[in-house]
Length: 253
Length: 282
Image (cartoon, rainbow over all chains, first blue to last red; front, top):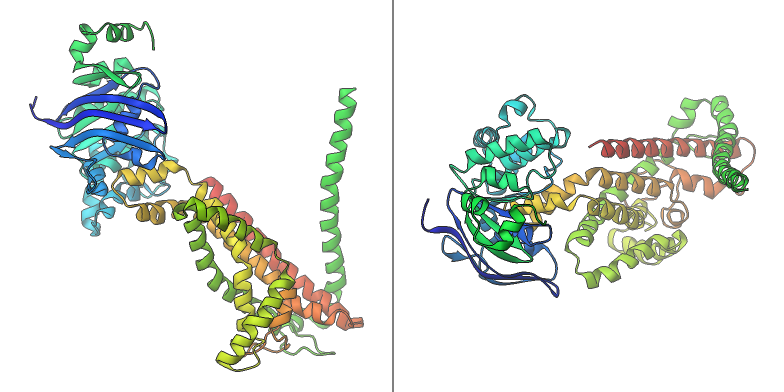
């Protein structure tokens, strides 16, 4: 475990209009670890993950205070290059959202966006990304098929491949398996365990077992606060806070 | 009691549906029985490919070519403007401007075609006469006019096609570090292409069917079109210009012109249906 956090969040507050969704969140996210966010619905964990690549900028009437540092640089500074930020901090969404294009074009979209035009280079990136997302063998013979024509679990892995194709440093996953069946879920969990060798992964999950299976660190969210954050083992075996213990043991949520 | 009421209402709705279908059937029967015998009698080939039209010779190729050229011109002019406007309205337009622009486009769709024609006659025709010479009443005038007249159709349908693309495509593209422009032009617009194409097909239908506005500015000579600044006659205007005084075979020839127009419209609508059903698949 490295000591310097990859992402350092300090006193982050977020409002949707008048509603304060995050009340001053502090969190360190470490390199090449899986950090899981758990907590009941509406506790702010999805809102929080979207502040890490500034996807909340797309929502109207959002106000954000505090700092989010990526490698020591505040991403909420005015002159932040948002496209570069989102290239470095990739995202996989709750609902698989491949573009209505071929599998190949989906994965090649990111690299093309960032200026890669050569066919041979793109071919290489597409294959590498699909292999990393553990879906190459299933789709290699029909890369020209529409990505919407494959199963939901496959679509989600295409989306992971698409995110990996731009070589991000951090991969944000917002409940990536909540719309999937158990077999697809298991595949994605396996994949996450693989990917953490190369990437820093942040994952929101509704499923506590999933957090305990795949993550190194867990943050427990409740009502827009982080109640407790620690190693996953500690959180699930010996939490410091009463509320964490209640949630983990299924007394609410 | 309720059951009887339901049956009666069922009957009322059925009657309404049947009425519109019957009127369609009657129209088809009327123009085909009115026009087909003349075409067969005169010779279908001579009628469709004949280049001379006068009181006794009925070749409508000039009008077919005229309709097609005017329609192509209107599409070439109207589609880029209309689709760009739709993209602007769906994605870039500030809300304040939108609240003005949207009703304005709707109003454009509601202006009677005779008003468009009058506008073109007073503004476009003299401008063409002064700038390019010739009579002013010309194919170019008809094209400019129709290019404007198809805008509301193209804008409204394209805009709703773009708006109906799931927002998750847009977020997906933004999350990969793409700019707003790239996300719109490389993801949203391609995803809306079947809807945009349908809007173009409907625009074609509107352009080819337009009569009153065109008759005011097109020059209307029943000869093969000779250039943008020269006059042109379309299928629709051919009918409206001569129907009032036509009789005998001449009258039948005009109805037969309607048959040809009808076939064009059927081809366009079939294309529209095919495009729509393809769009539904993906």
